[in-house]
Length: 184
Image 1 (cartoon, helix red, strand yellow):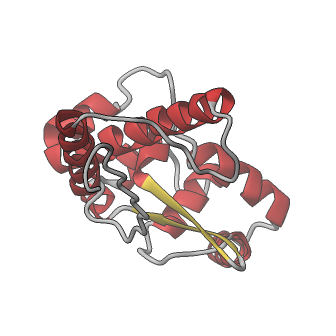
Image 2 (cartoon, helix red, strand yellow):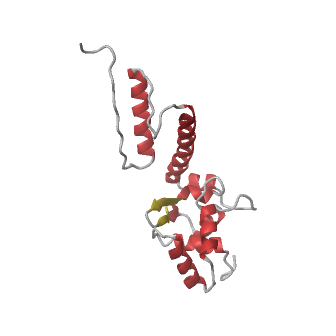
Image 3 (cartoon, one colour):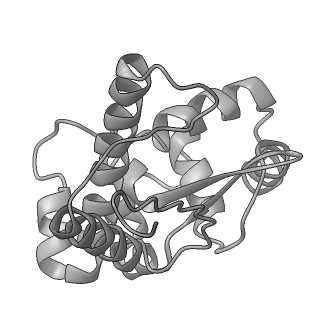
């Protein structure tokens, strides 16, 4: 791409490649300052929504979007900095001759694979939670079911695998275990 002829998406990606965690207003002002273009915050927010959505573009797997009390904060995962800017831009495209694909990125940088796995498992988990809520008669996120010791071991094992895949998490878990047939 000719110098000075970057798209707004590419300018936003360049801003994310600074390594900072940024909100939409920060990105808007940095894009305006770096490009000399007058860009609206709603345009940046719309582009960020697309770029950070892995179902719309592959780069979404590599953008962290965290909710804060002041809105969303966006940043690239550290492994994404191994990619060149052009490779990063290509991950926003679904088609195109000779474009750099996520499959190529994973072959070249295997550490990126964990972000695909964790993003896909989050999607699966959200679907499971939604279906669980629909079928549950409980309220306010409390669910109950009887499971065997073996199932509990599998459940805890899956939880540990998920935490490991995520690179560690800060989580709060309330677990109540009732044993039937024990005691007097």
